[in-house]
Length: 168
Image (cartoon, rainbow, N blue to C red; front, side):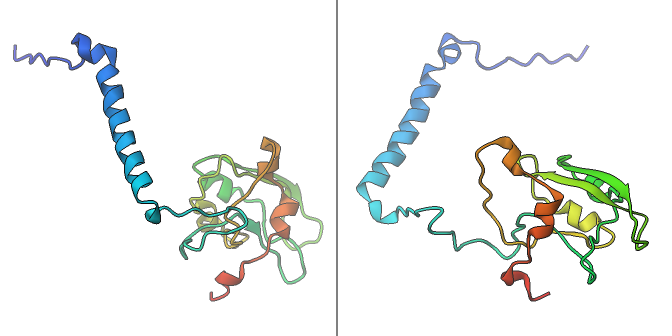
């Protein structure tokens, strides 16, 4: 019938015990350990967060921010394009009717969960009114509990543009 039988690997007792694989991994680890102990001049240590990294590329996407109009109102029209484009589903928007007559809607709630965010920038590309950006220059965000990593609309509006991104 043309059936080809392929023998599976790992059927021997040696393969089932995993001990040879464990020793092989330990051998590699010890080789690197001994190499690093003999020549410590190649090792660098930074006292983070006191000493910030200097090797961050220009293409790095920082923490998000929401932009404002000249009259200090929110540019976001709650169109849900950023939340739709987000592959991680980390953007949560709840719209409300706008009373100032500028647009139809505005976000009542605009939250971004930074623990779920993959910092891909699709939200920035999808926004039709340039309301969300990732040019804050904030590359480390710390917190004590999970709720600290959910940034709200007020926090997003308080973030400012980094000085490094002033060229565009």
